[in-house]
Each structure stands twice: as C-alpha cells, then as structure tokens.
Length: 350
Image 1 (cartoon, one colour):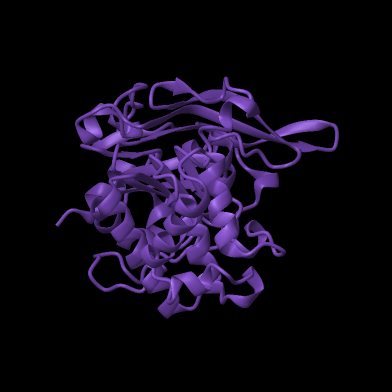
Image 2 (spheres, helix red, strand yellow):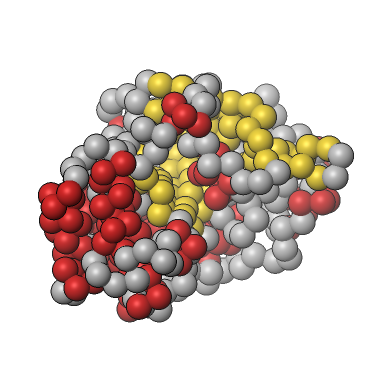
C-alpha cells in the first residue's frame, strides 16, 4: 500500500459508531444507504453508500453544506422519501428491525411513537385550522398513549416541559397566533409526546433568532438528558452541533467523509473539507480556527471519479481525482475518507 494511505474500515466496526463506539449495540445502524433522485429519464444517486450508527442515549450530528444530502439521508432512513426519490440500496436497522423492508402501514406505529421528526419549518407541519393543543392530543390518542381529558392534561404538561408560557392558554391558540419560536416548541412537544426512543431534528433552529436558538438548544439538551432518548441532529451549522452532539458525521456530495467524537473532530479534523467548515465557526480555541476557509461551491454535475471535494481542495493530488477513498480509521473512533489524512495529521501534530 502506498505511503500516506489508510486501510478502509471493515463493516461493523467503530467507523459507524457500533459496539466499539459506545460499549453496546447501537439503537440505529445504517449500512451502505444509497438514495436516488429522478432526473428526466434516469436515476441519479444523491446519497451514496452512507454508513453510521447511533448509540442508545447518543446524539449524532449530521453536518455539511446545503445540498450535500444530509436531510435526504435522515428522511430516507425512516421512509420519509421526498417526491421523485427512492432508496436504491442499503439497510437501516432500528432496535434490531430492518426498517427499509417495512411498508408504510407497518411503519405507522413506529413513526411518532418510537421515532419522531422535528422538521425545519414548524409552520408547514402544524395544521393551521386546528388549535395546537388539539394537535398534540391527536398524536397521543393516535398512538394509544392517552385519551380525552387525560390527553389534554398531558398536552398542557408537555407545553410546560418545552418552556411555553401559560401552557393551558397556548393550547387554545392556533398556529398563526404563536411566534416562530413558540411554534417550534409546539412541534417539539408533539415529537416527544409519546416518549420516543429517537428524535430526528432537521435544522430546527435555522429560522430562529440567536437568543431563541440558544434557548431551544438548552431545551433540547435538557430533554435528551432527562429522557435518555437518542437523537439525530441535522444541521449545516457546526457551531450548533458542537454544543449538543456526542459525535459528528460530516457529509460532502452525498458521501460521509469524516466521523468522530465532537471534541476530537473540532480540535483535530483530518479531512480538508471538515477543516474548512470548522474554520468558518467563530471560535478561538482550535489550532486551525480562522484558516483554510472553503473555496468554490459544491457542483454535483461535475464531480471527479475519486473524492468529490478534490476540485476545491488545496491539498489534492492526482490520486484524489481518480481513486475513491472509503472511511478508514486514523485514530480510535475517528474515521476519515481522505488520501491525504496522514499528511494533515503530521501537519497538525505539535
């Protein structure tokens, strides 16, 4: 093997956050997930052979620029496929059960009860003509958690839990009578109503002001710590992921290119793309902060056969354009898909 290369991690090891990453079998395991989109008369892969897992009680961040495939990955895992898309390959195991083999009808008792989604835009999720309290009650009744007066009592309790003022009054309001931050808290209340094992958060703070965003992050951390649920947090904002996640996985052009414990990833990133993303985060502690800003834009219509980031990478060599590299271990629990990772490691060493 040529100098500077790494051995790809075998399936099932800590690269995907399996047993070696958290000391037990993961709650969620994703193996070689591939998602295609219809483009005129052909299918084009927008997510390619993505593998990772989420431990019980763990929060995993899924990061990357807009268009990298992170939201598509998260939604496809649980059968929320966008129009014109399909899961073309792979396996998603949740608590030992293969989800991709289930029909929509078989998924219904799992969605909302064991797996909940908090989407980016709460206004598009809430029914405008229905009071928000009733929307929570319908979730509780639909999954057989509670009914009638008990369901409304539980709704008011949930609204208080997510920090809504005067929760009984809020329950009687319609979505348009609430602020954006209040709407997002209602959606979170719906998501945690059935005490799910996993909550999937897709850019939940993007449309919020900085103060509301900080409060919401504190709330999510508190809920996770109190309930012990697992979480998949999808965001382009690495500063947010740094605050809330145990590990972070970075995607580029539909592929997973680096995954590591959060502190390790931020202080010793090994993929040039990850380094560029982190350099854009306002922080002073890391050795690389403020350097290596990303240049150019992601162009999916002109990707090389090798690393998709090679055309934008200041460290690329001819091999990077021609030879694909899969995730490989560079340090315990730290995996990266980059031919130059060892060189960057040597540069970062004190």
